[in-house]
Structure formats: structure tokens, C-alpha cells
Amino acid sequence: MFLSLPTLTVLIPLVSLAGLFYSASVEENFPQGCTSTSSLCFYSLLLPITIPVYVFFHLWTWMGIKLFRHN
Image (cartoon, rainbow, N blue to C red; front, side, top):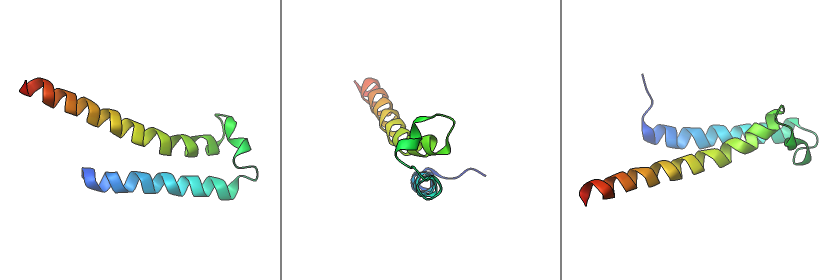
């Protein structure tokens, strides 16, 4: 069973935010220690940035296809 798009739209940012708070509580040097790609903290900061960018470009592409098809 697949989750619907509105459910994923709400669920993914909440999971990202939970990961960010988890990393902030576990890492003793939270902002400065997030530079290594081997740390969980790095990905908990990367995920909330990546998802809105992906959604923006996905909608941009969809809008371009809709405009190209109707003109």
C-alpha cells in the first residue's frame, strides 16, 4: 500500500524535523560537528534542505510540461 501525496507532504518534513532535533540532542557540538559526511548530524541538516528543493523543481518541471502541452 502506497501513501498518498498529501500524507507524504506532511510526513516527510515531520520526520526530517524529528531527525534534526534528535541530532541536536545527541551531538555535543551540534552546529560545528556537522561538517563530516560520516556523521548523522550532516544528513539531518541536509534532508530538510533537499526535500523542498526537490519539490520545487518537481513542480517547476510539471508546470513546464503543462505549459508546453497546451501551447
